[in-house]
Every structure is written in C-alpha cells, then in structure tokens.
Image 1 (cartoon, rainbow, N blue to C red):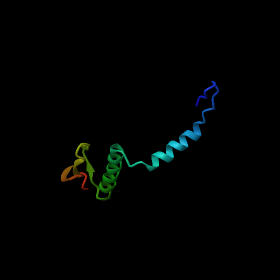
Image 2 (cartoon, helix red, strand yellow; image 1 turned 90 degrees about the horizontal axis):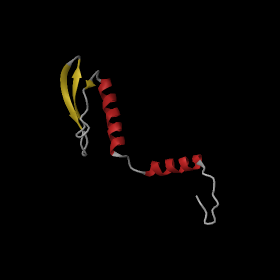
Image 3 (cartoon, rainbow, N blue to C red; image 1 turned 180 degrees about the vertical axis):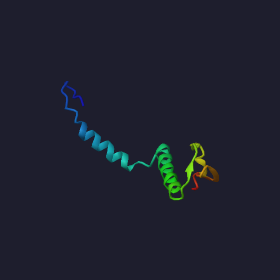
Image 4 (tube, rainbow, N blue to C red; image 1 turned 30 degrees about the vertical axis):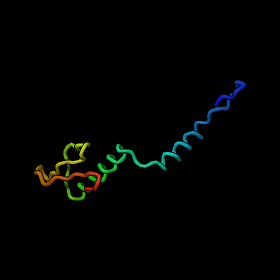
Length: 82
C-alpha cells in the first residue's frame, strides 16, 4: 500500500495468504476442482470392485471400465449426476 505522501506500509505475506484462503473457502468449486473431485470418487469406487478405468474424457466425464483386461461397463457423469 502506498500513501499519498510517498510512505508505504510493509506487505505482510502471511496476512494476505490468510485472507485469500478465507475468501477462497467461501467460493463454489471450479469446474477443474469438480473434475478432480469426481475423478477421485471414480477411482475410489473402481478400487472397491477391482476395476480400473481408461483415459477419462473430461468434457463429458465418461470412461470405460475394465476388470482383468475385459470391458465390464461404462460410467459417465453430467450435471444431473452419475
């Protein structure tokens, strides 16, 4: 911060980082954060059943599921849910 007469206040990095974190916590998740959360949920669900998935199509959030190298299903997510 700079004053009219040329003086300055010291920049407190910790204070600023704390305020940014407080504001960020009140914001809704971004599309990227949502994709990451949904990807983590999908990975956990697959692990429970011994499944793995191929590359995820992030535009539609869909993937094919395989078990022991065999295709066993398809799962996708849109704004309405899984």
